[in-house]
Length: 383
Image (cartoon, rainbow, N blue to C red):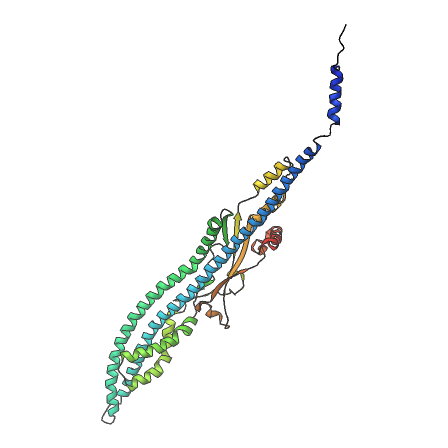
């Protein structure tokens, strides 16, 4: 008697398994969840990238603003130092001119007394007394001129030293400003930035040699007149001839004595450049900062989350703008009293401030399209 088999045929079983696999709906939510999780990861990477863009942009702009302002501060301080050096040179010139004026006063007294002495005789005892004063004042004048020449030589040497310092400050300030901008780019704001550039590059401050007589006429002549009169009172004995010479002689010689330190042959003092006016580009500086891209990790994460199919993203479009920042500043003379232009380098009132500008103005005219694009970026991200 044969046994009845309870097992289904092998072919029939496999067909049933295939039908069951195609009709089985369990686990569908898990598959959908995997796709949603990948999408969520991509969104998170996008958000992370946008946050990095904002933070990096702000730090880049802070670096450019700080560098530009510091460069303007350096050059404003240089202008103030030049003003101080002008005053020091003027003080030396006053001393040198005063000693010459003192000698002129004593010589004038000797001449006046000598003219009166010409009438000496029994008929004019006063005239004979004048001969005494003439001889004494003549001797004092010789000594006074010797002293004045020695003092003038010393003052000229001192002025030459101070003038050399003024030239060093005038030409060295832009170097110091450039180094400060580089320092901000390479260390102060590193690793966000790796390079800072100041424009114009190594262009001296807006000062030059003053070949006019204005400093001597306005800053030297009157103080030298007063000091010279006092010095002559110390070097000469009192007489009515000396008193008369004090009232007359300085007005005759003081301009000549003061201008000895000015003019084409001297060029000791510094002045603001001819044709340079406050608010113009000559007083303005631009700082540019270059930074390291900080979004490659974000891009890689987005590409992983989208199985490598994301070729462009927000970080790509903002990377250029986010790794270049720029700012403009200027140094200026804080004029509250309506001073003449010649006065600008005789007062320590130079200050620094920030300016907003069109970056396209700093580029060559041939790069018009680039300038326009950068102007658009500047309007969006510069502050």
